Length: 43
Image (tube, rainbow, N blue to C red; front, side):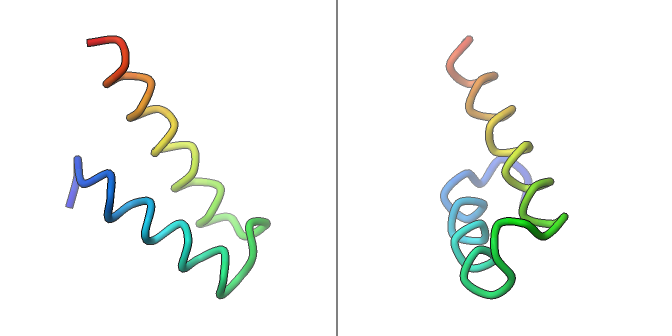
């Protein structure tokens, strides 16, 4: 599922609702989404 930004953002929202933004998975996914968006903005 790599490269699917809308689905990643959907998963972030779900994780936030289920476990809160303090869980490690949320932080990892948030960092990955930010890195992906930065990379895309640079192209």
